[in-house]
Image (cartoon, rainbow, N blue to C red; front, side, top):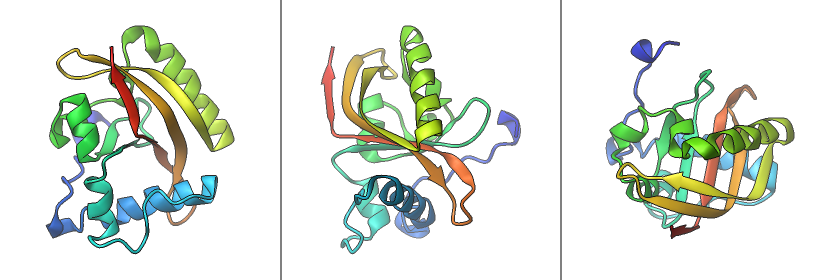
Length: 162
């Protein structure tokens, strides 16, 4: 699918149950691969709202040849200093500095092969150029309800400005 024909994912809101289907896929894939819950399933507010408002970062991208972010919770938006529309229009490789992109590509290849990794760390850059180190990152493969590859996701709660 070309960038021009790509449909932007809607911003999570009560009107779309905070993208409940996407959040369910994120949570189910994470649970299946790690044996742990990304969020508590019976949360109030809903799991979608809980993940969108969580104090840790959750990001995902699709399966395009140059994968584009298709989910970024509020903590991710704040850390990367971007709106939902900006992040979900950006190839995920651009979240890393140019020198870190080769390392990031190796990481994603390892995730594709093994299903998930934990304890990744690396330098990322925000929209304003602010550099920060992300640590104790979990990255995992996403699969849809039919078991087809649907992209990759990452979560982390530890970062520090450089």
